[in-house]
Image 1 (tube, helix red, strand yellow):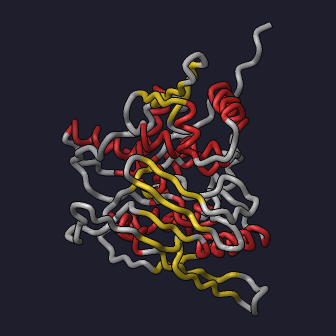
Image 2 (image 1 turned 90 degrees about the vertical axis):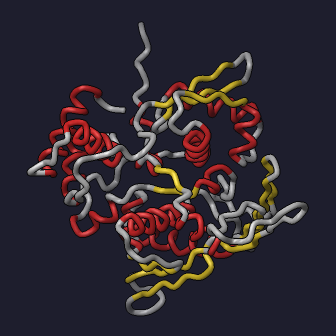
Image 3 (image 1 turned 180 degrees about the vertical axis):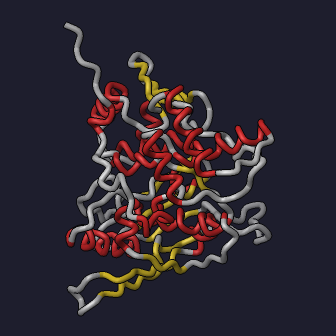
Length: 356
């Protein structure tokens, strides 16, 4: 008998919020963003167990140290808060709005955005994540200085020291145990400079459905080093070092084999040459290299994205929007009914290509 082919969706967390509340469409439809420097270097622990040891990483002439607080190093799940914040600030920048290092938001919107539950324990976990983010200190020579700032020359070097989150305020109703009304955080200047310069990459929404921390980290690395290229090989030992995982090479080899077998990583598939111990990332073709030209520069209604997700499941609707705008440009066509045109394009796209 031929064994059943593994279904990639079986190895992803369920989509807890497939139909987003209308009042948070602007949150749900924001493009997922992450700072490029953070995606290449292991700032975050890959375990939920408190880790208070100081860690140092070096890559070429770049280095960083992660100095945790007594509550432990910020984890890759805590990072979801910063991904959410980066996404919201980038969305405002793209709309020409003013932005600052202080961002106020409804934690429920964040929990839905990152595919979490919205029960009491989820809000408690949010507050604990804030504490770890505020307690973790980064010391590094990786710069995100604004254009025009002084650049070290010769034997000089800038060393930055900062918290991932500089300060936070959580407003509750009816005292310390009451319902959270809103939260406000101030990100470090280092992170904010990276946001303003748009040193970011788009993440697939299924990033938040990956079950294991090491899977998230491998995806981040693939997104950074492979990007829009057709494929990219990397030695297994070197890939393990980039993840920052504290695991044996033998166990990591097993993890890679599982990723190859179940093929559930967004945007990329993996192959593994066991003889050479080389992993190769293969682009699934679910991303574009640059925003294409268009004959229409208007904005789509939020419910257009919702309908697009229904007719083209698992596709990044913002990628499809870019393809649609490029298609409009090739026809030099300005749609009379943009929403209907976009949804129709997505329906045809899915009919021709199926799931990514």
